[in-house]
Length: 189
Image (cartoon, rainbow, N blue to C red; front, side, top):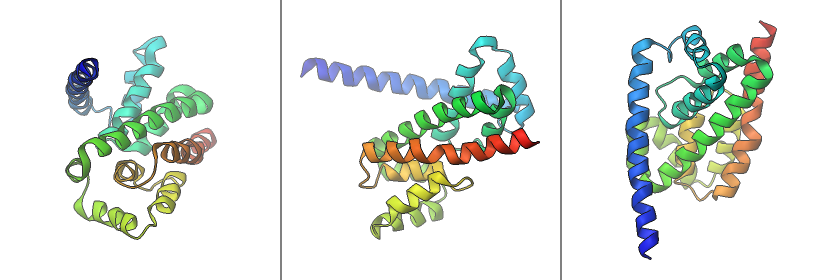
């Protein structure tokens, strides 16, 4: 019991430290413009050499957890920076990790957190699907098809009755289609 409490305290402190570091990174990223311009994002990542994929994966995680960064732009930047295959892989890894974090943040902090990150009418719309027992289908198609508010859906799924195992299966199976579309779009250009 004592070790469990100590582990929980360590986790809480680590969460606070990581949140502060992520906020600092977001402020810095906004200041230098990497979240608004995919060319600047690609240039920024190239400075990290062999660590560029890790930096990019981190950016993808951040753009899911803190939805102020347009996800489509960073997906395209990944494909531009690393090519269609590795761009796809790094996008997928970052988006899955970020989605899992969003799910558990919603489980832990609830509706208040979600309302602080998203517009009230959007949140209410998807909460309505939970009340009507249609959320799992909406979640599946929202993850499968690009252009839908999948970050919000990941958070709302944390309030739904979707188990983590089912959530992860939908994310892992659904995310690739949208990413393949981004990769194909860039490859054609």
